[in-house]
Image (cartoon, rainbow over all chains, first blue to last red; front, side, top):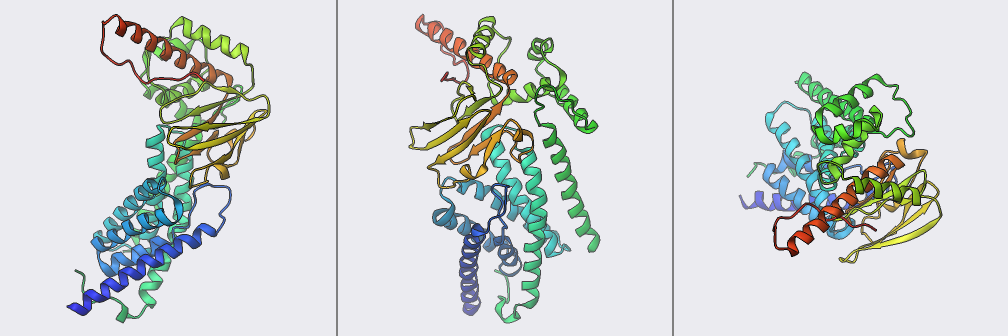
Amino acid sequence: MQRKNTRRLALSALFVALMLVLGYIESLIPIGTIPGIKLGLSNSVLLLAIYWLGVPSAFCLMFAKVILSGFLFSGVNAMMYALAGGLLSMAVMTILNKSGGFSPIVEGIAGAVAHNVGQVGLAIIILKTDKLVYYMAVLMFVGMATGFATGTAAKLLMERLPESMRPQSRQ
Amino acid sequence: MKKKNIIVVVVIAAIAALLLIWGLAQRRPIAKVAETDAETAEIMTEEIKETAEPEEAAAQDEEQSGAEKAENEKEQPSIEETGSRSGTAVKKAEEYLEANPAESYLLITTQSNIYTPIPLNEEGSFRITRADGSENVIHIGKNSFYMESSNCDNQNCVGQGEVTLETMNTRILYNMVLCLPHELTLEMIVPDEAKEVLTEIYQMQEEYEAFLAAQEAGETEELPGDEQDAA
């Protein structure tokens, strides 16, 4: 029992560190003319966490990532948008996962799209404008592409990482 | 199992496509360029039916074409709703537009204020500071503007580029530059929209002054609506 908790703890810490590093690296990649586009590579880690660590832990990892990367990189003001995106993304991925029978790739797609919708949706609500809907639609399509990438990454990770890494039972 | 996956992806793509079409309908035609896309024309008429503002629709009907009517209906959610247009407000708006003629104006909206539209004729920069220490420097030119600098931690606004009369419909963010951390919105508006905004602003001002006068006379304690600043 103790060994399993230690393993979960170590894995969680590893995941958070990984997400922070991924967040930093993807902020260095210039995407182009569309502002606010991020690859969202952290979603693949969160998806893996849902499978391996369970939903409550995965939510904690998401909060940790949002708060930490807000303080470290993107700034406190932008944190609420990241939080909105993260919450919606995790909710959608959790629902799909718990319903069963969905491929991680599709969960990744839905998660990335939900993340973008959450962010732009919050901006629409705060600024009380509906002119951002076109931007949101564009981001949804981009999210489908990035979600495909992150979902595939998560699927490959689950298949290729040694079983010994995975905690034996969920809490 | 595979069918489920495909269904989800298709649903997401369908929703995104619908939103894309709706977003495209938000584009502002400059000088009555006809919308050739049949779907967007349909959506625009639906918008007119949906927004139930009978008094304002009646007041505007004589002046504007269908396309601009759709814009004005959508313009309203960002400004506090009022009843009929007061004649003096409309007159003041027209006077302002005559005194400051331009092909396009810059409309600045912050969390609590809407500023009087600025005519985009000459080159220049100006700075907006707020009480919480946030600063944005905006550079304007002939029918164009962009965010020159900002002290937000995001710097997304600076990278959003320039809005010009030509690119206003084709940019991703259309006619806007947003500084989200500072809740600052810069919009390029054409003179008809500027008149609309100005009328709202002056009307708000009148109502507020009337409210102040009434308050001094001790008559009412109710609040009118949002305050507006005239720059």
